[in-house]
Image (tube, rainbow, N blue to C red):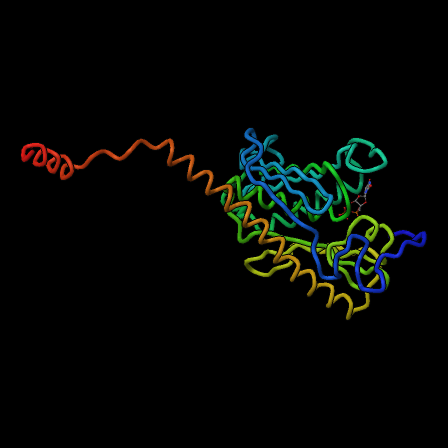
Length: 268
Ligand code: UDP
């Protein structure tokens, strides 16, 4: 949210800098199961954002002093690659990445059935390879697919989107210039099964009415994100089934079939 140097973010026809309408989400494509060393993984492209997510676990949490006796810990690491932005990003953790890692971990603590693995840990790593606004939500969206790919039971799939105010108008899924020069940004993530909001942050200002409308627009946009997640998982598990079928030996012939063949041979 910076000072606009004079860029027209919404033209007189209501179109945004990338040609979208105010309620239009950028194109999303997700591939699940892209990394063979991780227990679950997903690669996501959302507009110009490119994100890789990998999940390890659940496994025993060491050192033991960090263990929780009644549940497993969900540990998240969000990282922006040095080459992900136009100005080289200084590598390594910073306050922003620590904050994002924490809010994403809190979101997943609410949906993963953590009580199934007392004293365990699930590690979620999210690498932003290319950034163009909305990366925390893009990372969380990819991580949710990676968790499902790892077979980790959840109360529901988590999808998200960021809505903001640009040139006085509410717009879903802000792009880079809108995020930089808009008036506010409201990233939200929802448990799509229960409708619970598991992440909500706000940068800038919105009136109460604008906030409610922005939330409505975000929840609608989440449906499109959820569809992309479902498509990715469907493709992933159909491919897995095909692989399984290929590797399974043909079923043994039953006694009835054997008897039928003997009779047929004798008649011939
Ligand atoms: N950004 C950047 N360098 C940084 C952090 C952010 O260029 O060190 C850019 C990046 O494109 C990011 C955008 O600023 O997507 C907005 O960042 P914000 O903290 O609002 O998080 P996001 O919208 O990505 O969730």
